[in-house]
Image (cartoon, rainbow, N blue to C red; front, side):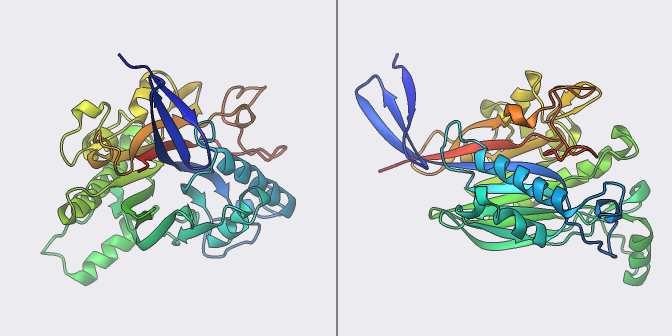
Amino acid sequence: MSIIRLHFYFIAFLSFSISHSQSKKYAIHTVAFYNFENLFDTINDPTTHDDEWTPNGAQHWTKEKYEQKLKNLAKVLSEIGTSENTNAPTIIGGSEIENRGVLEDLIKQPALLNIDYGIIHFDSPDKRGIDVALLYQKKYFRPTSFSNIPLYIYKNNTIANEQKNEEIDDEVEVKIENKNRIFTRDQLLITGFLEGEEIHIIVNHWPSRSGGEKKSSPFREAAGNLNRKIIDSLQKINPNAKLLTMGDLNDGPFNRSVKVALGAKAKKSEVAEFGVFNPFEEMANKGMGTIAFRDSWDVFDQIIITESLIKPDFSTFKFWKAGIFTKPYLIQTSGQYKGYPLRHSLTEVGFSDHFPVYVYLIKEMQ
């Protein structure tokens, strides 16, 4: 049997060497997701609950701390996936972002400035004012359309997502929504061309576990259902549509929102036509994690891909492998939370309470 060895060459290229006699070159792109954890500026926005992240707020969030946070995040983003691909990620999904302005400040950091990232961002109805967004390298990815798709969830499940009651007229329905709707992050859908190939991306930050995991699970299941509807609609237009859905799902790979609502499978062999594959379930099985709570790890941050991206034909971009980015500088080295992600505290500007995740897409060069 041939032994396959990987040799990596220039930015965005790799080479497979098979039995010393045959060499194939592949284009490679890193696609990443990172929860930036409270990327707030220092300005008080009267329309959101951001008072904590101001100079006089509970976090004493000063210009100096904000600038250090930007520097820290830029370092991480520039290095995700570089163990296998010397180029920074081509596409980055992000969450816990206050506004477009903080992203503009982020991509101007020295570690990112020369990469020339573009921004796709919408303000969401989240009451804290935190949003999801996409950064992309302009020289490799060209967006053609993007939209923010709202997730409608309600207290006590009075009205399910997209469910209609013909006995309720529009005016009454609006009153019910205003009273009971839980305002959370929209799902950001982007379509574009990665070096000439059309791909779709959904960036997510699903509802939190506030009130308890079991009580709040229906909200994340609704998010998974919405994800599935978006995927289905794109696959109806193009059965071979390539899609990556990524984000902080506030659930692990084994929870109902991911396994049932979205229908993600742990093994490629289990993925049916039009199905989705979750490479992060295997990592969770091995005890790996992106977030820790009470000394228990879970993989809340995931990148899940459609069956069209795992077909064994590399004439077009396909999934190669996935990873969790856990460089030592991202990890607490002492104290009660030793070993956890190094997050912000009143005495130290850290990175995030989540580790970033990433996947590689590769294509054989002709």
